Picture 1 (cartoon, rainbow, N blue to C red):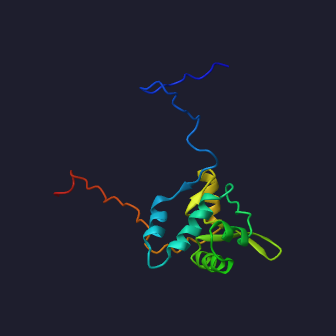
Picture 2: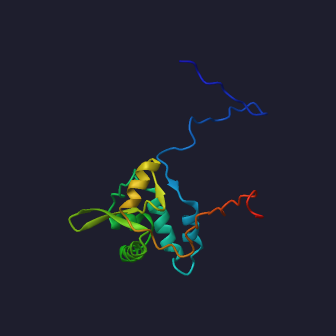
Picture 3: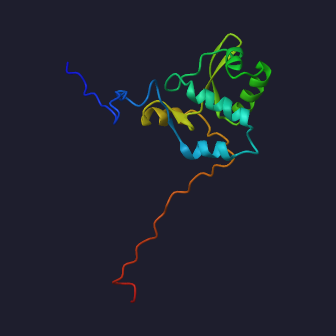
Length: 158
């Protein structure tokens, strides 16, 4: 196998290269909806947005929940477990976080497919069919563009 070409800067130092821009899995995020979450300052606090972003960054795959206990998540986010549970309950009531699966009395959470998806477009459409859209405060559903009917110029003046 041929070795990749090496690049050097103006001082003769080797410039590091990577094969691909992403280190791990990546998500397709709806920018308008995520912007609605960020701008809805009356609806969500900064800590609630931080919890949502943490879940976005930890999504393991298409339509899969983050399989971590709430105590471990709270420890990583440097907050009390009760506080994290309160934030998760609010995000779940807004349908931004969805219950993924149950293991005994533990619930593992996932981000709504309306906000982010790691699968193909067809997988995202199928996932969206199963859930109600989230209640995003500053986001307004776009109206479809409609065309005016074309007039027939030949018969218009008669």
